[in-house]
Length: 355
Image (tube, one colour):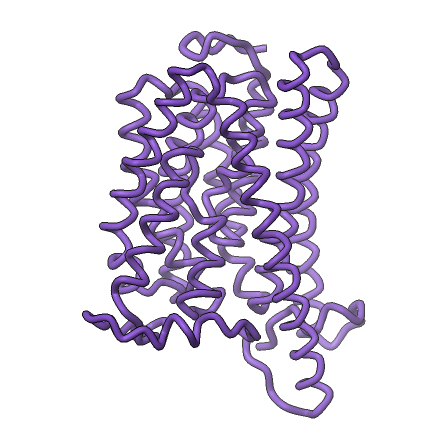
């Protein structure tokens, strides 16, 4: 056990390094900072709610730089789209941090963070699951008809509506192949910025779906562009959290050590799969993270009377991250086998990219 003096608690070092590595891999793959998993995890490990939020956003800022560089090399970043969101994101982060400090003053930061996480993640999981299942079904139909399917396919009709909004100025995003009102992008930035500041996350778990289902970007471009945005929102959020006394830098460094390795692999793995595969991993990560957070929330609401709930929350939180990492590695392995004409399960061809 290592004593974290600023946080005022003890925790095993390997848990923080393992958390950083696994969340780095998942985050590099689905384009999120992973805060919706890390903040509840740190609370489960015993960190106060406000401290968990601060530590998480500081580690996200450092990890996302590594993942962004890798995605830039893969051509997955639309700089115009990303930089257009910056103003809204910064405004939203400030609002989110102020809300967090208000709940901190009331002594309700832990309960507020967990309750909000559960509600938002359940909604996103349900929508992403339904849309991604329909997309995968469409890919199978097109493949059976002998048609060529690229890396991306989405059946959501929301982007058509939002792209039809003619409120000037109109932004042309060449890499993402989008023509859309600047105000739509700015509002996405504000909404996700509030989440970034309050939950101590990069906001990616809602920004990636927003870029795909509202703006109409491909999943790969949404992943890379979101990581660029997380560098900005995470950096500003980290500064504000540090100024508020919500950061234990020793814990941050242990997490970054693991994240540096995981983010590299996760980013490279995106080149082996189609968009629906990334969205599936995102939706499953939301469901699993929700379950761990819900167990911890019940434990806190019952005045910590049932210790087995806390134990289950710890086990489930670690298990979900390891499961997602194994799922990603399995997709990469099956993708390589499929490219070489070897046997793979029937559900694999519609999810992996062909050379």
